[in-house]
Length: 224
Image 1 (cartoon, one colour):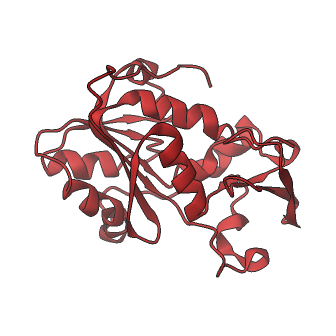
Image 2 (cartoon, helix red, strand yellow):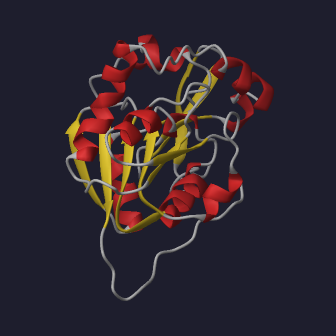
C-alpha cells in the first residue's frame, strides 16, 4: 500500500490493536491506520466533543506552553498566526494573542472559517492535531502554502520512537489518532518542503520556512 504521506509503495503491516490495523512506511517511517479502520466524520466529532479544553485551566495552559514558549522565542511581537485544528475550546490562540501575537482559529468541525485557508500567516500552530490527519500529504501541502517566508509551522504530537511499547501505548487508545510520526518522518517532511527542523522538546517540532527570493509564498489548497 502507498504511504499516505510520501507516496512510497513500501507500506507494510505493522500491528493490529484496539480494532485498528496499522501500517508503516519503509521510507518516511509514518505509521498510520488502515483507511478501512479509520473513524468516520460523525465518530470523529463525537470523540472531539468529549475533550474538556478549558481556556482558563492553568494545567491545560501549562501543557500548551510546551509549544507556545519555544515558538515565541523565535517570533517578533506583532506577528500574526493561525491555530490550525483549534478544537472545541480554543486556548492556544487566546494565549498567543494575550502575549502579543494575534492568532486566529481554524477547525473543520468547530471553527470552519474556510476563508482563512486562503490566507498566509507568520506562523501556524498544530497542537495535538497532525495525528488526526487522514490525508497528511494534502494537509502539510496546505500548511506549507499558508506559512509566509520566513515563517514557522509549530507542531506538537507524541512521537512513535523506538522506546515506545506500541501495544500498550496510551496514545493509540484514542481511535482518532490515526497518523503517527517518528523523528525520521519529521525530517522527511522538512526536506520535502524545504524547511529546517528544530526539536526543542520530545513532543514539539518547529519547522522554519526560510526566505526564498526566487519564489513568492505559495497559497494553500482548499481541498480536504
